[in-house]
Image (cartoon, rainbow, N blue to C red; front, side, top):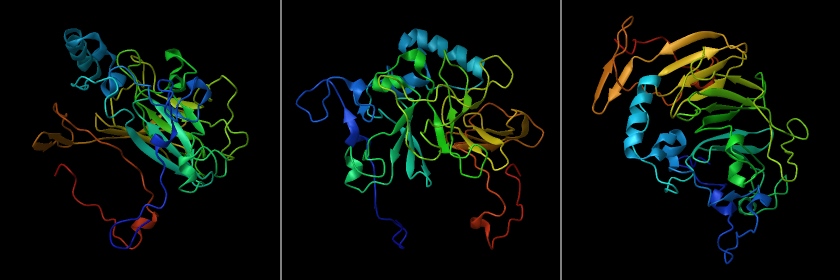
Length: 334
């Protein structure tokens, strides 16, 4: 909550650390004989091989020499670099939570866990004390995970063939009033070399009733949905296929179109529900170490780093623009 002095006070918080489960040390309070019976908790011993680098590029698991050979090959195939450092299984950045989204109608928060390749939803209707427990709040489950999707290996109810998210970024609840309102939209980055393409995935949550925030889970089964209700991006080598190793984002627009930011490439484009591209922007800004350069209109970009983290579209009537002049200024490359 803003304190009026340029800072803020914490009035509520949720921590994954309060909702761990493990089957290694019986002396600990979070011990369970069968982790799969506790999908509301996160298995602290789930550690993908190679850590953050490994979930993006499985070639790191092949050894230094083979990895170098494969990495150079994929730079040629994708037109971009991949991470050059070796990841460590169980490294300190073991979760890399990279996005949150709030749904006021459900009173719930969506969190992206990048390294486990999973999305989770938790209840925001709890008190601060209840957020650390397994009871309380509107759903009676405290701060436990209400829904999770992308990689059921994390709660031991699936295998690698059930994984559907790969190093994802920027998941959001689609705002009410937009086409698909209430669904989840996520930038599903992909993984080299076996899932060497990116998709934009729209997920319809498996609620007992629309907007209820109560999610179904059959005993011994995984959370739904089985597959996205809408997706953009084809397999490698097909038309509309693209691949982003990291960063990047997506946004559902009020007209039903979807805005996509290809982060590593510095490209933004807009597609219709029928998957037709109707607009594209290519960033002219290049930044390498201590130098910056710009590509002039009509010229081809040189090799370099054109990374964009995200791009969002705001309507002219947005409250932040009230009373402000929106007169266009100079072009970036001028």
